[in-house]
Image 1: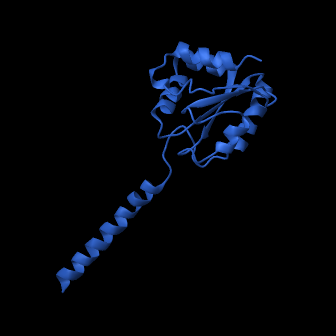
Image 2: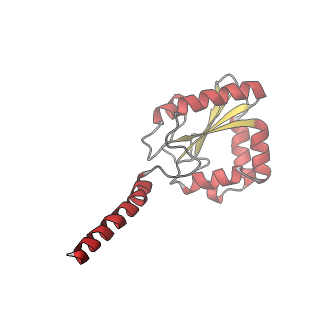
Image 3: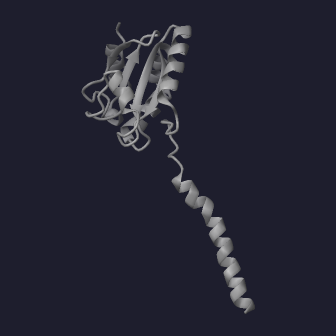
Length: 159
């Protein structure tokens, strides 16, 4: 009897220890695209910051599962691309999930997600859409160099 009780208690302890791991697997993916964020609030905050800083807003639509989105994020995080982007833009990243989140926000900016992600829109400091990728220009970001990405962004940011 003592042996069964000990076995039962050990099983109960192991079950409790395993619970946080199960719960952790159910939490949103860690990554650059905040899956809990309110995209409209984030964009409005970026517009306010851009107006104060006299910059444009770069809205990047992507997802944490997307290898090209992650590659673009890494590329914008260091080197000359990072320097140029930070000099010209206030950046806001919008999570599109599995193309089931914030699609309406993208559509309002004239951004199509059908050609692949990441995709971007450039806004003026007043919130006007200056340009957007329409043909999957960044959808192969992991194979693009810094110069190619900057050329895409430069075309979009001309007012």
